[in-house]
Length: 198
Image 1: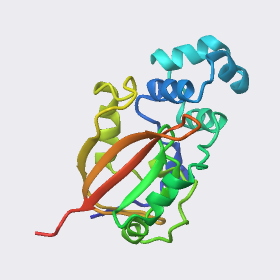
Image 2: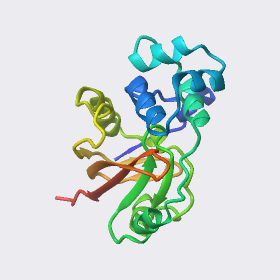
Image 3: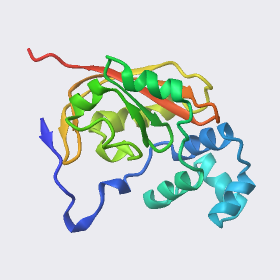
């Protein structure tokens, strides 16, 4: 187990860059029906900038990446059946907005595993808490064609334990699967099991 201390000098963990930002942005933008020109207008940049981001020719700093996803709007979890299925599942599950990792719903089992209440992390980007293995798996998505596929093959990997001030991540298997909300927003169902002590 390793404990993640607060960053010195007041640097926020939330400033972490997203791997494959351009492809992640393109998948979200197209899924919710935004044109590059509309997004450029909202962000007060030119369309060529959006195009360069999506092609990977230019990558904005982490804070700007967060701002881009905020402009595209939070996922609306009006999909009450999906939310209810996640929240009432006996499995250890959570649902995040795929681009920003903003937490949309999680089961009581996940809340217990995280050592938090079942609503404390709703709306919070879980990316800031990602273990080294989660960051590596996220970086591999680009090479595996995850962002180009409408329904990519589920991704499975192992992670180590990490303890933060707001969440504890157990060591064990993680499985990522993409789903879509009714408004077209791509979301990720995250399931897994804790690694049993030897």
